[in-house]
Image (cartoon, rainbow over all chains, first blue to last red):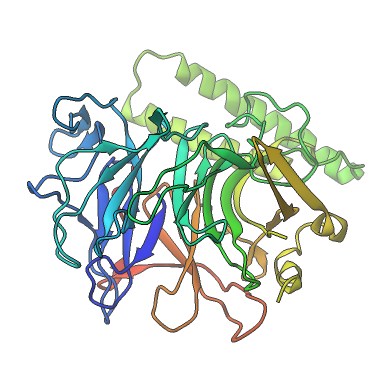
Length: 313
Length: 111
């Protein structure tokens, strides 16, 4: 869920525009007394701003719809990111929607500054003869002037750990993006621990998956750096244990084995009672705690999320 | 300013690593970055306490005090705010606090 700070309603106070996993664009209005409750942004027909796939709150299930331009058929994409930007340089904020699948769509604002009227359909963003698309499952797109030519470029993170740049080679009011170029290569690690742990570093060195990015002049030196939130997996080096530590490890491993066996029994059941579900949750938490303690002594693979600075030279 | 921020954020990686220079050459683009360093908040690696899933950072002046805060969205639909406790120079991020809306923790239906 990547927030963007922008004065969406033109009242002089920063608001937040947020894309969510629900698939719908949200506004968190700011005010001089703080933020108000989030609200779904509506198009000119009073409908939520979304792409094809979304979580239908009324029916409480994942659902699909079609908001393609007349006579066309967009893929059933899932909107996970929203950026408010004056795309066509007409003085009001349009919405760029980012799909998890990697594509981008535009909702033009035909209203006025602070009184938006967003089109009711999603216009795919072209890139040459194809459509604009970043690899590795899109996370957080940011529109910033990366190369200092006065036009906004697209910097975008991805689930594969890569960060990509699409330069804007168009004119003011008519952006035209080039193919994605790699700013940070994909992480080359499994997205989830347990699906392979070879060649892991001994300490967290870089984010390798689920990378959400902001391109910002972090250190005030005049160029844009990258702030990247992302997941990393590492395996600490083995160390010599004291006799007391060895004993503790023995106890913990025995407890772990026993808890795993109990959990496997519950997993094998076709259905579980409420009591069994509670037991399963307790076992899960117990295994987490045991793993946490065992990691102090044994070189087990660890996974965690951090925020990293890539300072540009 | 250039170079001084590294000292503020590099405490959890070795000095050698922090000074390493990285060139990524992917496609036709080559950009030089210093080796990535983990940001700290309240003296610990940021997110060690919060345990966010999929933290999404952005720098912005969220409270209109003229200074940028670090704001992170997460999978749970929460927004975490880190104040820069320095008045000038290197940024030092304070402890995480949840962004408030009308007196309550703000939460978006993200999942």
